[in-house]
Each structure stands twice: as C-alpha cells, then as structure tokens.
Length: 244
Image (cartoon, rainbow, N blue to C red):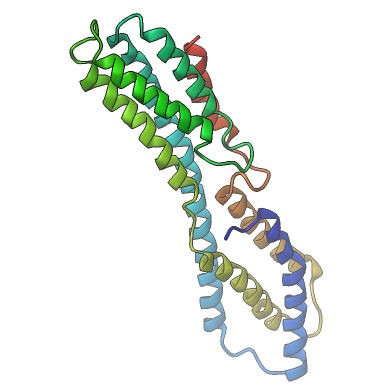
C-alpha cells in the first residue's frame, strides 16, 4: 500500500476542524488544562515522528541516486572489458550494451517496472553471447575471469535497484503520522484560549504540518507526485553518449 503525496493535503481541512473542535470541546466542558507535561510529551513525540519519517525518506531518496551511479559504473566497467574478446564478436556485443543502457534510462519518469521485459531480454542476450565469446579463439585468457563477473554485477544491480524502490516504511508508520497530526491538532485546540481564537496561528500550524508531510511523501514516492528522480539519469546518459 502506498500513499499518494496529494493525500497529505487532506490534513489541512481536517486539522483545522479538529483544532476548532478541540477548542469547543474544552469550552463546553470547561475543564482546566492541568497536564502541560503530558501535552508537551505528545507534541514532542509527534515532532520526532515527523523528523524521523522525513529523514528516512531523504536517505532512501539519496540511495536511489547512489544506486544509479553504481549501475552506471558497473555497465561502464563491463563495456570496457569487451576489449578482452575477439574483435569479430565485439561489435554485436557493443550494440547490445548500447541498447541495454538505453533501456535503463527514464525509469523514474513514470510508474513503470524497474526491470522491463526489454532489459531482461538484453541481459540474457548479453550474458549468453559474452560466455560464448569469452571461450572463443582469440579471446584474452582472462576474459572469463574479468568480463563475466563484471556483467554479473551489472545484472545484479538491477535487482538491487528494484528492491530499493519498493523499500518503504511499514504502512502503520504513515497511518500513525496522520493519526498524530489529527490528535495533536485536537489537543492544541483544547489548550487554546477559550474566549478567542487566532485563525492565523491555527492555519499556520496546519499548513506547516501539511507541507512537511506532503514533502515527506513526495520524497518517499518519487514517481507518484511532482518530484522525479530525472536528474539521476545524468550518469547513465553520459555513459550512453560515450558508447557512440
């Protein structure tokens, strides 16, 4: 289960209503606010939950970019080691590598499989032809030792990227974040001045929380909202151009 970033904007009206409901609830019951320590503890816990969720999303976002650079390096190393093969087998394999690199571009533009059918087909072709070419007459004696492990690493990194993309916090964390947002709004409204309300401060609080959670979800799910990882393709684009 994923949370679309735009779902965070539902908190804006909900928190405003809960702020006003908390204030009116206190007004009706006219109970004195006698537990500031408990309120402070709840608000502090909410702040920690926001901070850790945002920090984790940024860390996973950076991991995506690092994995793209790592994959680019793996493809580049394997491509260079094609020089160990017989010259007659190199052109076909180099073209397969160009096609393969192209298939790994723009994966973050839309919601699409991390490993496409085209990528899987090219992986099989590259592996089969590289195994045959490494044992062909004229190949460098170390071709099997150097080229095949490099191609294996190039293929393995695609699975690593796929797992990393679907690695998100448990759903309960996001649900808890939304629940704490509403609960904190009610508690803040309950602690407000009974005689008057400040709509400016109420709106400022709800907007700050909403924007923070919205940014967190945008970073956590980079292909669902406005944020994209398009800049991460620069390493692969540069590698693809160097192959021409």
